[in-house]
Length: 326
Image 1 (cartoon, one colour):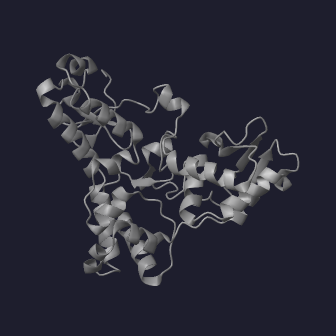
Image 2: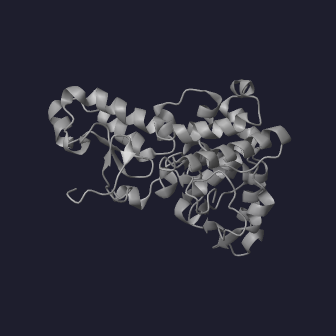
Image 3: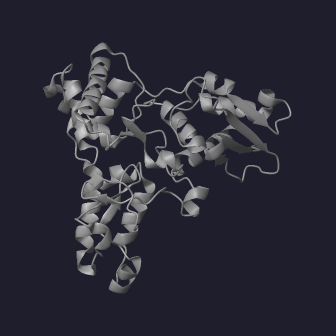
């Protein structure tokens, strides 16, 4: 974990609910906004600055939403949707409503669910104020604006910390991806370590089975980007499991399937099902197609409509205790 008890960072919604991509990302906690908390964020920023100066990377899994703010790039709705798939789909669905009757059936009020999962009023008493058809654009604009700004103070404190070590004039010279690499290093996937973490199912000779041998040959021939995509495809994260995490990669042989079938992943179990491919070229083609083209991850929680926890109420821009009348 990035944060073991201080609650400075929260797992992004996609990570909490095993939905979509970027499930390995963390975001500053909007509720950690005291001066003491902000000083802690400044310290994190100083560590990040030290990484840049000393070329000594550390693993900080922040999304573009954080890095872009630090270097001064504009954050957009797409940056939120990248770490909160449910919010992104909700907004897109609202944008697609074309009739007043359909809008009114939604029963929307002036509030939005925050990064932490709590409800925040967009106007005073917003939970009791219905959003009129004529107000829908303003409502959606305010939803996105609040979500874009809710971590701004924490990220700004981190930026101040970086600037205490790295001249502030240098930060805009980086793209957000360049700064991420300077702070965190390249996300290199160690194939040998991944192989040691692997359990085999339905393979008669485990790692010596021809299909297993072909698989590791294909993986070793991949670029780092594709290896990261392979991990994202199999468990929703682009980095290797942390040491001593207990996570095991499960490789399952599906005897009854062949060259006409695609590999299948089970992200909840860090599992990949491999058909009985006739050769490495076929396997490479099928596997690369799957990991490059499949970015959406289905899950039981989302299908069951249980993406979020409690439906707490809030005031404009602030979280409050749950209202007994809600």
